Length: 219
Image (cartoon, rainbow, N blue to C red; front, side, top):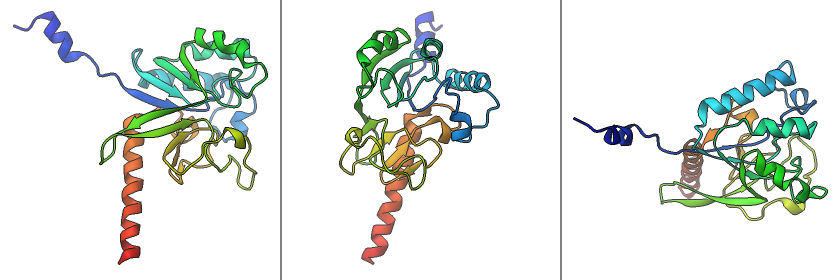
């Protein structure tokens, strides 16, 4: 007969890692600006919260790559506290605690109070590949390309350099992947966080396609 401890060990859920970006909670104009399928801010908040909490367990780890809450910050910031998981914020230009904002230090304590254990400008996350784990850069801003075609790249001093892989936000529904960059924003991932494993699989498919193209050029 199995003991309760043994049964608990067999049923214990493995901690998962998720990424997301740009929920823009209580942002008045975001529904029209990025063509979101919601009829009101209340509906958007309810659905974004429900889809997040349906996927993320309380002990999971979530990297939010910026632009969590806008509008009346005393109303919108607490909504982030209703999102499950241990949350790490990679701050974006609409976060009051972003280093480029006006007096961001005023918002550090409030951001921790809604569940962010760390607040960072950028980060690194190991992602499994065929050759073993490789670090991927995390940043709200992509290296280039804005959310609207033809729009000049803003926030140049905050964008990463180099050509390595990165996960980002900021561009909403403009694109999901390109140039070794993957947008983890809600608008291109069914308005929910995306699992790290899913992103790793997408990265490997892109790399395999690039390898095939290189083979064709050599041939």
